[in-house]
Length: 290
Image (tube, rainbow, N blue to C red; front, top):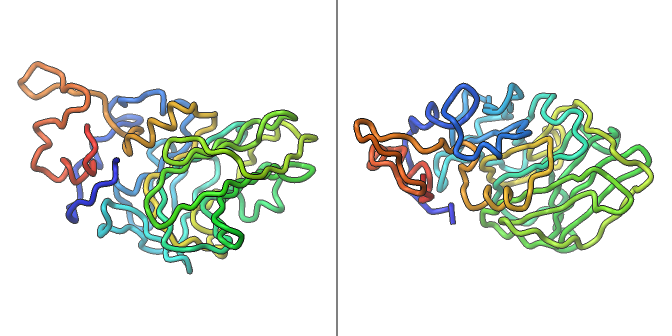
C-alpha cells in the first residue's frame, strides 16, 4: 500500500524535480493525456494557492489547510469552513471526464460534498457533483445535471476513517449506458441505485468553477483529509485507475534517470541511490518505490 506512516518530513526538493510540462519527462505519459488538472498538496502550497501542475487553473484555499503532521503532506479540512476553489476552465466542453483523488473522511457525514462543478449544480445544466451521505447508510453519490433532469447514481460503501482512492467516470450520456462508474481503491464497484435522464445526451460540461470539500466554499462542508486530486477530460481505463491507486505519485513520477557518472539507468522500481537518506527518499514517497 502507498500509505505508510512516516516521521514528520521536511520540505522536499522534489517540489522542483517532478514530471510535468517544462519539467522532467513523465514515467507514465498516458496519464497526462487529457489531464486538465492535478492538484498535489504533497508538492506544497504557496500561501493559500494550491498549484495545478497540469494547467493554469489554481486552487484557492479558504485558510491554511496544508498539514505536515499526517503520514504525508495533505490538506486537512475541518468540516466547518474549509474548502478549495478551482478556477474555471478545467473541464469545459468535455462530454466524458474522470475525477480521481485520495480522501480520508474524519467521521460520519450528513450530506457533504467532495467535488462540485458550479456554485450549485441544481441550477446549472452541464454541471456535476459528488458527495457523501450517511443519513441512510454509508453512500457515495454522483450526479450530473442535464437539460431535463439528472443522471444520478449512488453506491453503498462504508469508507470509515481510513485513506481511500476514489475515481468516478462520468460517461457520455446515452439511453443504454450508466452515466457514472466508480472505482474504490482500484476496483470498480457496482451501482446500488441509478436514475437516468435518457432524453438528454452528450451535454458538455460548462465553463464553471470547481469546488472541493464544500458547496461554493460556503455550505455542505466535508470534514476530511485530501491527498492528490485530479481531473481528466476523457474516460480513464480501469488499468489507468488501478495505476493511480497502486502508485500515489503515478502522474508526477519522472521517467528513469541516469546515475551521475554511473552510465546506467536506474531500474524501474528502485530507489535511486542519490535520494537515499534525504528528505526526498522514503519520507516523500511514503514507502512506495521510485
